[in-house]
Length: 449
Image (tube, rainbow, N blue to C red; front, top):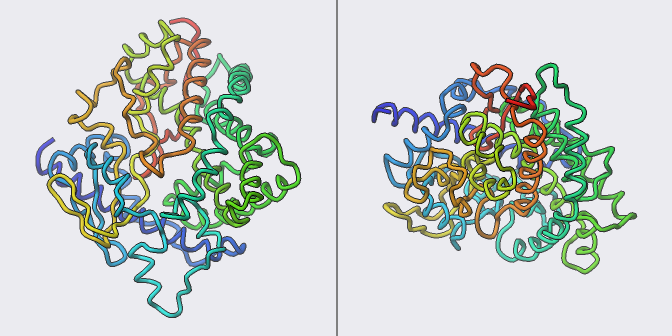
């Protein structure tokens, strides 16, 4: 890639990030109305410029774009939002430092955009009981320190590992239902129901409801494809969360949602915080549906690695970290902001600035991983940042890893010669700057090479 191409790549990537970030922040702030069951009718259905940018190579070749940014300059400003500069951080050591820095905050209502907006007397700031103040992902300091242990307990290693037999049986049943005579979409016919059924089991969502909400959650993850539909989906999703949690109140069991109610009874969580925590666990848990096909996408594009994996599946668990590093489910974190100067290598990010961290960029940083754009299934990739780092690291990391391991093991045990239905067509990825998930994966299920 020439220097001119690298600069163009970086400029377009920055523009795409800012557009998608702005719509996400607006969508989140609108949950004032969405939580009350209303939706806006004046949301633009599409953003023409974003749809132009989604055609750039970042969607299909994100690591080249991130390398162009990472290798050409230290942490850099990619644009402005809400009256504040937006910095993109892509280097491994810088990313780790930002994710644990005391001057970097996730508090949505202390962010520059909201603070500047709230100066208008017509704009109210929600009180402590409003839905948008009760999602742990948007909390910091004392409130986050108080609420996070309840989420960690809800997704404890003991509870996740206890559903292992259920996960294995579900994988077998789903594979039993797939056709060997014609192409099947492995993402929607296998990975999605496998991940959702397992998450529902861990949290305590009734089995018959486990596939009710994923479509709404998906619209929220990929809100730029249809912003108006995303607003409608948000209302339905939050209504579903309230319904499930209200029912759970009267039928406590050994599951994650029951633990949230127990935390409430112990005086740790308010009732409103329970609903916010439940919404986060359900929505973020959708990433577990992508780790199976993300991992398979790595192997299908690297036949030698596929051959090594299928020749000895007993080693698969130790190789999942490399698949997660290579195709991280999140390319970028949601925007954070600074409350003081943040010193990084070659740059100082000032107070009241936004920071967008690239987990995918860090996972492909040659300063930390030798030859990072090569899939080396025997690499020691345990230091990958696919699930984040620090106090906001994904509490579902163990579940995501287990779903990937079990899902791929069951698939490749039965169909070691699985192949793309059309090997001449590139794998289709959902267009997003933040998430990394296949759009569809039509395959032929082969038992023998």
